[in-house]
Image 1: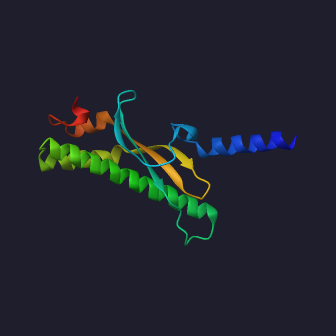
Image 2: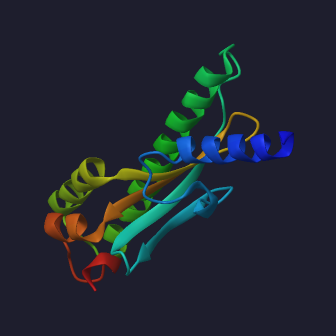
Image 3: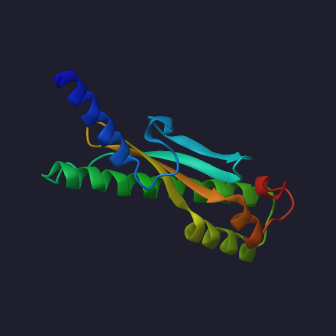
Length: 144
């Protein structure tokens, strides 16, 4: 009977961790993934690992700081990917500004994988439609 309760607790924790997430926690990777264009659904997806802040004494607070750090790293990776794509396409500065603003507005957390050490991996998506609407100069991956 104890084993059944343990499994139920693990399932409840997994469901709680994935509440509000579009991607189940077991499909979120365990480490960083560079931004990559996905066609179905049409998104640019990246994953980033965040370490807990050791200065925080409470485990819940440390875990939350890890999620914030992971999301910030994922957004930074998206911005770097956009910068590289726009530089290769020789885009205008105003186009770059619009695309970066679109990344900030449209980027959403779609999955979180809590780790045992208090860290977390956060999966962030940006809809391709938001990037195309902002600017899609010839040569950028989201313009195809």
